[in-house]
Image 1 (cartoon, rainbow, N blue to C red):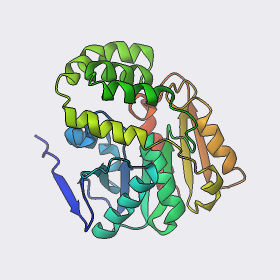
Image 2 (image 1 turned 60 degrees about the vertical axis):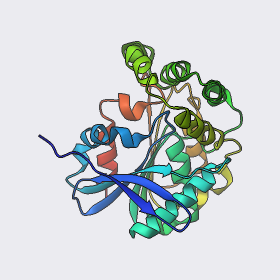
Image 3 (image 1 turned 120 degrees about the vertical axis):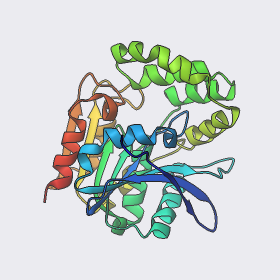
Image 4 (image 1 turned 90 degrees about the vertical axis):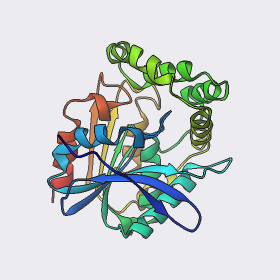
Length: 268
């Protein structure tokens, strides 16, 4: 029986932040997950199993957002708190993978602290948020205390139709365990994307970049990845792959996603 992944906590002067780690490879890979109704810390064992093919070469860290959320908390602040967590843990020159909102955080980190990021993978990430869209709908549901509606709206937007129907009963059941505090946190984190725009700063990213998107992304739109690529065009160290039919959560749904990650990470 596999050993359970232990949740650890970074303690700084200003906040605490949960994380977990697994694998024993010489390279450091940091995963910054996207916005979620309930913390990814609750799924540590599942995440470790999903990324086990990368553990031979990597020690993998997965970070949550800070525990003590202020009333307003922007993506930029999320990134700077994660940078502080890196400092406390002594992490630098890491391979950084950000999914969705985690990709936004990863972009800010790579722009502001290039010394921390050796390679950058962005999946289903947008460099600019111009309107609320589906995130605004999620926020309204969370504020109304409608956990089931939120989970179903979330799942319908993230997953392809067939996958969503398969997950519908699971999402409905999961919603029963959502607390008022989790809905409050979700609202703050979702609203933190408002006004996000790093398009003018993307050229400051110094490391190799792998952009992964999905043409049928119903959260950020199918052209969000192309807009980032346009800002980085002309670079020999840029890779782009577009899926079709795997939705916003291609990092979960595309069967070859981890293989593509590993190929990029191991490329010299």
